[in-house]
Image (tube, rainbow, N blue to C red; front, side, top):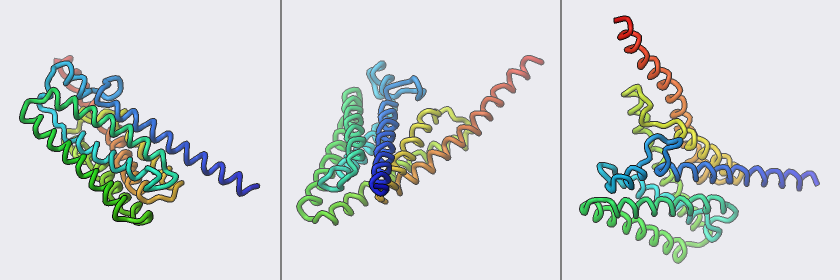
Length: 243
């Protein structure tokens, strides 16, 4: 009876962590469209100006690739009992695919061709991964094969904020690192880190553990440099007033 109750509580906590991760990820997927929390929404500007301007579509290509592999890792035929990994990555793939199509529609001809090439490459590579994992590998090896690919793609995605972190330190400004974006990234990572721990799956908790550390670094930097920025911004006003 006690064992059954513990298992039930453990399962409930695992599901709660996975659902929380899905919710925070959904907020992140919306970030290119909304300025309520995330400052400068890329696609609202693209739609308003009918142009991609100098924006790059590569982050959405990378995100689509990661979401597709993550989705495939989470489906029961590859990994049993982690369906919440499949759901979050399926939703993420839909968002990224939509953003890429919008980018292609409003990009200049040279960018259209390049983005179409990248999109076809991602879809082709994903098709090859599915074919290899289904036709050439048995069940245990299939999970390991896709798990390594999923973990590697997640780590590369979580490493991308390193550029922003470097920029914040160099400029001593948090202008390009919105607080709620950093917070959502941290909360999503920590939720799936817990989900991976509960499931005993290193392909989930290792990359999300790295994401949690990087997310916490962003929040610490935001706290430090936002205060510094405010102090710096007050100084010229005080000086000019006395002048």
